[in-house]
Every structure is written in structure tokens, then in C-alpha cells.
Image (spheres, rainbow, N blue to C red):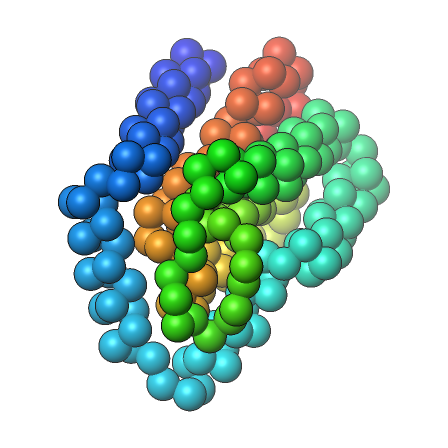
Length: 207
């Protein structure tokens, strides 16, 4: 189990580095794929869906994600789940620190003409990064705490839809390229797995 997680972590890091290299070198194939995907999402837009996506994307904003973090963290403290608390907390901190630093390094400009006007750089998506950490935490830390099977699967389904939608909303709203979102989701998974592997010697490790 532990070896498998380490191998998966290494693969994810390699994939992230490859995407980063393609972005840094302005690879024409990647640019073409990004433009085609974002154009497809643009064709799906209509007022009600625009409003929905604008609401959903707020979950990934620092203010709202911090509130969600506090709720989850308090639950773990009440349940006395020390190691899962450390995994969730440290992974959340990592995914809050890394995207801004990487954006400054890559200096990739955002798509123009989006529903939100943002001035910072694009790669990787911070919303997708935090969404990945929250989704993995929901699936492997919080879902096992729910004893009722129906409630557990409702929670898993709702979490999967919500956090996946937060990531996809960044493409839909034209504030990120698809490769930004993919890289962000991979980065969030790396953050979670890295901390989880470091804490693997504890019996409370839930992944």
C-alpha cells in the first residue's frame, strides 16, 4: 500500500513537471488543446449556468475555503483524529502556499474575455489545487467517519460534484486554461499524498 502511494506520487510529480515544461516552453500543441477545450466550454454558456458557476467558484476563494477548512478541522478535533487532522491541515497549508509561488515562476497570462477579471498569473489554478485536497480529504478522511451508509454515499457524491465543479468552473468562467486546472488538481493531489506518506506510520492514516 505504502509503496503504491509513493509510486503514484512520483508519477504525479512527473506529470506535473511535464505540464509545467509545456507551459514554460509555450508548446503549440498544448496551446491548441487549451483553446479548443475552453472554446467548447464557452459554447455551453447561458445566463442561469453562468450564475451557478459564479456561485460555485466562490467555494475555492480564500475566505470561503478557510471557513470550510475550519469546519472540517473542528470535526477532526472533536473526533480526536490527530493524524488525519495533521494530514488535512498541512496539505491545506501547502496547497495555499504553492500555487501563488508557482504562478510567479511561470508567469502565464490568463484567458481574456472571462466573466471574472483577475490580474494575477494563471498556472496552476489555486482553486483546482484546494479542490483536490478538499475532495481527497472528504473521501478518505471524513467519509469513513459517517456510520450511516446512505449519508456516507450522499456525502461522497455531493463532495465529488461540488469540488469537481469548483475546478471546472475556472475553465467555464474563462479565468484559467484547462491545463492550469489539470495541473492544479494534480498539485493538490501531490500535496495530500505527500503529507499522507509522511504520516503513514500512524495507525490513523486513512488513505
